[in-house]
Length: 60
Image 1 (tube, rainbow, N blue to C red):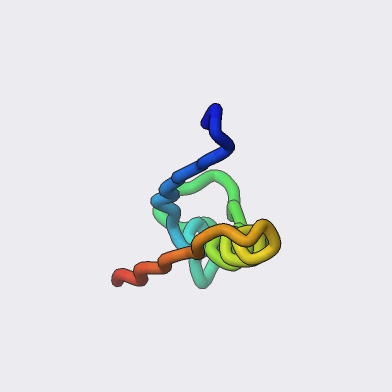
Image 2: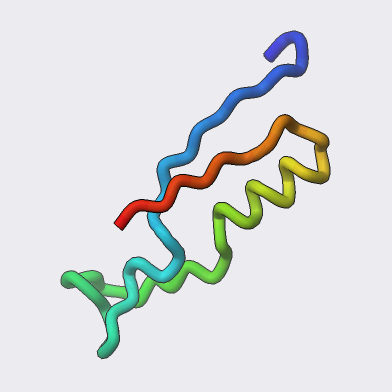
């Protein structure tokens, strides 16, 4: 970090993972809607700062 180099990893769930069809999913007390797409925000930020890029892995 002293040289201004950064390497980061984020293991994040997909947006909206707390929301079920009829309300809160899996016993959650709130709907917890994720209104931002974390992967898209990371990709745009990387592009703006001319970083090496973003790797997205999708799993089900």
